Amino acid sequence: MAKDHTKNVRLSIASKAAEIIMEEGINDYQYAKKKAVRYLDLDASDILPSNDEIDKALINYRLIFTAEIDIDLVKILKTEALAIMAFFADFNPYFVTQIFEGLLPKYPIIQINLFSDNMKEIEYVLLNNNIPFATKDFNISEKRTKKQSVKKIPIILIERGSIPIELKIFEAHDQKINRKNLMNMRGLDFKQLSNFDPNSLLSDT
Image (cartoon, rainbow, N blue to C red):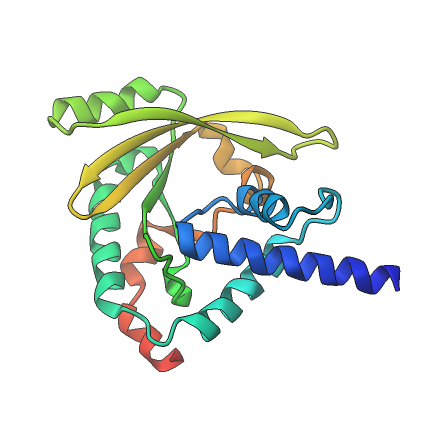
């Protein structure tokens, strides 16, 4: 019975986290899980669902609540993301997204992860090209060891067109770390995004 209860709690958290991700455009699974726990008023920090369970819940959410995939929006996201990634090619850009699975949040944000030990270099690119931006910090939990620590991630916000852009600046060595140890970072690099055909999603609907 206890095992069934734990499973049901995990499913409930995963379902709510998927809703939060899709409704609020959040890309950080860990944050979505914790927010779901608070929303459900649960004491379940030790039985949070895995990222794979969140993925399954997201697919279920899409099947239930999203009748059609907005291919035009997917194409816009691809075009905009590629332009930003090309602009910051020296910083190994990575587009955090699941558009390749047809998962589009209600309020999409283009999140590009960049990798550099000198954030000033990235800011210089923006300043040199007269691109206005704002900055803020975001804390994520790390699990590099058994002891969980907090990592501060600088974020650069850019207003370009109708879709907000977030550049999350990770340290260069973070590329070598298992992505799930930093945060959920499902997505595509420049080559993968270039090869992605939005029309391929039509066959899945």
